[in-house]
View 1 (cartoon, rainbow, N blue to C red):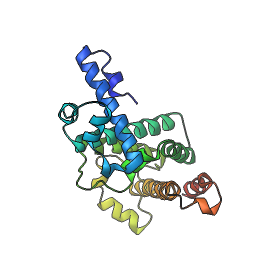
View 2: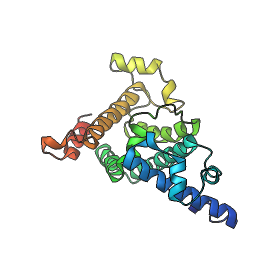
View 3: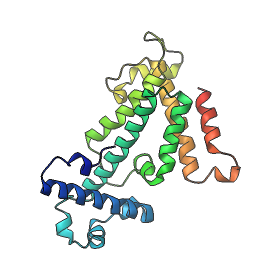
View 4: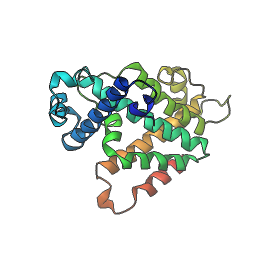
Length: 216
């Protein structure tokens, strides 16, 4: 994933400094989230840690929601790039699930920010949905069948009539059903694992995830 600092390397010194400060703010924000959760995120507290005044920091992020959006955008961009790279490399469906699990386990707070409990009062902008749809597009490719594949169940038929959430992504109803089943099984196992609910069972959750996905 390209950070703001890397993207601005070709710009003037003021723009590069701004990008560097924004990256530092985001690092402090992740530390806050890790210690107290996203609801405790405070720009004033971050400003104090950075030796800045609150008003000075607001020149880099207009408010809490803008900072949260930047964090969510980075997280989705990282996952979308990871998923696309794995698919391009020819990873199987089971392998793709393992790659996403590895991404989640490498930074659980990043995963929970985008797939955990919604942030009260926060509404993500449309470009966030566009990035998340890149992930959906890969899943539809991985789970794809024949272009003219017909509905195989009542739920397939329901999906065929309610495709607004999938946008213009081309796929048959059974393909959408398989992709949705992949996603719900993946998220179910990951959520339980990250919350520690699978630990007492004494087995590697990765084995459970691989079997759940292979069962599809």
